[in-house]
Image (cartoon, rainbow over all chains, first blue to last red; front, side):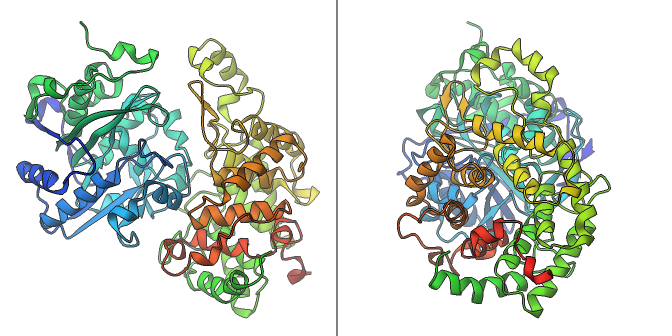
Length: 308
Length: 320
């Protein structure tokens, strides 16, 4: 076992207990999401009381049509749920990858309309103070990365991606979403050094160092085709939850009509960070078959379809 | 330069705000009370020099800031994002640009070392070997890049991107001949060619991916402003005119103070009027920008005499 910076033990997947993933139907951003999220969090018995929580949505860039980023209604509902469950502080933080004017991204996402004043709520992870972290895994050649002190200092990190395809990685879910904690002020916009290290490998290194404690995937409207920015909106009507981000991503893939074991970084994550095998994941809420909605993918990723 | 409330606010509010957030080590962080970093330190120094309000207090702040920058330079001539890092990056361009404005012989060696590092750093994505490899790759078909154009990356030996290329071009501008590496002229030409090549369809720039999988991507205000500032020696170039037109059309939709400040600086440097009524003074105490040192510095620069601080004469009379 390796101790990571956030004092989480990095346990090989075969030594981990089975994981639980919950799929909840949510057909619209206008419906009452706070109660749904709170009820699901209670079900997971997350130790939230008195804790500082960081919600890490996927805020890629400016998004006037509201189809690229995690929807602000989901972020606000999650924040409300964690506060109701007794969290002492719930921050929202991200480091947008494509646009260094985070204020412009926040305006475009209309996060203020959902969360109110952002001054003591939102943390721009691109320009947060940083601390060097030796990476506990050597999947890429990075060896070390500087991470935002906010990410390293909170009690719980919640990855909140949108259900999307990705034109380099195949899919972008709760593991890939953690690219956003890598500070642009150190590595640029986009964080190109991670691409040079190999996206698949860098995803593993980052998540081994700052593994999210929980994941809430916004699949109410996802994105298919040429994601993560130029794809087509895809209404799926689900929120997917879990305390094992690998298992959550595997379930997301199955919901998207893709085989998680064929997504390179997920297959590797399934050996060291969590579970991707069906028999290791207890599904609660909706059954995958009931919500499955195959996503269109670029020709390069047709091989991610499960064998007939 | 805009007269009226913005100007007086910059003088009365901008300089004290910036000086008041200086750390004891002489640098500035991205937020008040944050640890010192090279990038915000450079922007504040640029702003304090541009505000021309160099009284005793700001003068001392600038000197301490310059000392912080000098101490942060790495042995290879580059500057890191944060003093703890051992690898330099694009902020080297900012540091060289700021030290140029100090007009002091004592900084010329540091500038020369920084510029040599900049000119030695070739992006690996466009190396002859990579270009050859890419010609066999199917992914090559998804891009429309001119392989021969080579700019600068955010981090050394990676890929060319618009903003670091623009900032490197600005760093090479107006420097003394004695500190310019022999390859500077060649790198400038290649860098300018890269910017023209990476322009989005119809004008403007994003981070540097105008096409992804055959789909044109949209421009953004910040990279467009920096690219235009770096290319202002060619105001009649078609790409510059198209991009200026895009910026003017987009100006009224800008909602963030950082983008608004940079767009203002950019249009003013080309002698264009600011379209619409958006005013920087709308973004004041209630806005997060006052907690973001870098944006506060950009706002101060936007209400200063843009053409003057962009030129090599910025701050000259103070030291002459």
